[in-house]
Every structure is written in C-alpha cells, then in structure tokens.
Amino acid sequence: MAAATACARPAEPAPAGPLGYGLPSPPNAVYTVADTLTVEMHRPGGNLEMAARYAMTVDLSFRHDPAGIRVTGIAEDFEGSMSNLLQPDRFSDLGYLVNTIEFTLNRRGVRRVASYPELSGRPAELFSFGGLPYDIFPPLPGEEMEALGSWVDTVVWHTDSEALERTFMGVYTYTLSGDTVIDGRALVHVTFAGEIETDDALGRPLRLTWHDVKGPVTGFLLWDPQRRLVAYQ
Image (cartoon, rainbow, N blue to C red; front, top):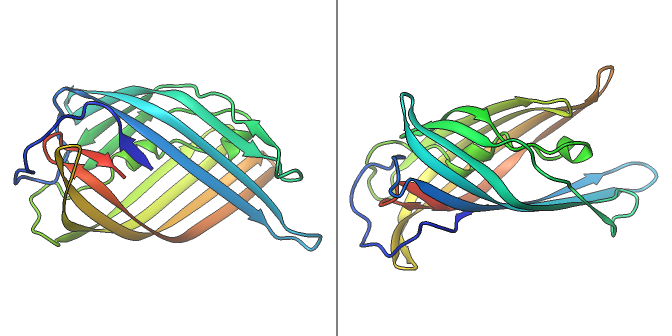
C-alpha cells in the first residue's frame, strides 16, 4: 500500500486530460508505504508460520530528464519486524535500509531503475524493494480514457543481490471506475485485477533454495489529475 502524505492541497474538479505521469508542481512528493508478509511451511512434523511487516516513508524529488522524468529520493522512518519460525510470538527487528532510490519515468510509467533501498542479512531474503518504483508508479495508458474504459499492462522487474535473486511479473487489467473527492481534491478511482508471479533464488552457491509464488491480485488506486501522480494505492 502506498499513500501520498505530503504536497496535498485543495483542488478543483478533475480536469479532462491524459491519464499519464508528468512533472508535478511542486516537484516533490512523500509516500507512506507499508506491507505484511505471512509464510506458511507445511511439513510432516507440523506446520510452521512466520510473519513479517514493515512501514516507511519515501521522500521523492522530480526533475526533467532526457528519458522523461528523473525521480530520486530516500526511504525514511523505516520500521520492520519478523517473527521466528520456531517461536512465532517472538519478533526481531528487520534492521535498516541502505541505498537511495533513483529511476526514470515517462508518461506511461517506470522506464529504468538505477537504485533502490535494500536490507541486509536474513530479512533481505524476504523483502526486495526492487519493485518499489513500480508499486508507487503503476503503468498508465498515457492518453485520455473514457469513463469505464480499461487497459491491460504488464510489469516485469528483476533484481540480483547477494542474498536474493528475484524475478517478478504481473499482468493487470485497469478500469476507470469514477471520481471521488478526498480532502478537497478531485481524484480518479481506478480498479485493477491481475495475476502475479514471483520467482526467488536465495541462499549460497551450491545451497540455493528456489521459491515460486503465483496468484491473483485485486485492488484500486486514486489518481490525482492535477499533480499527475497516484495519490493512494
């Protein structure tokens, strides 16, 4: 889940225009990002369950770039914890993030990710933030859409770190569902449904473990046509 928590101001009703990213004014935004992960292991001796969760704010700045828009920023106020497989009521801290976030964006979405925040140690085997830019900036048609209009798009990204190699692919159908007003801002309501697949390889050479997770996903996002950014997802 991502929600813009700064740079908000009262707005007039949403103007007609393309559903695509642009350089916002002012050229900055702050998002709150949070997620929870639950892992269940089924084995003859009994089932094991582990839970992990995190929250952070992502402070972003935007500027023109030959590729479109360059987005840079930092992840702040990171808090996360992970339970023990053998003692599920005991949680340990996920540690801290390193690296900044930097990527390029055009009117349809993310083009290239240069850097992203990372964890270290065992938590890095669970959480990869290589997809963070795609989460905050989902693909858009980049053109005007009629009410109840829809489009299909695919998101693919790959990361390869010392702790985890991950390949993600998601195929989504987005549909314009109407307008809503929050805190004086007229926002466009977009629903989506799709199928995602994540392939992981973790561990050390000659002792690798592979995970393959796939399944359906549904949700919605709120588009701010004045800022030309996603306000909530």
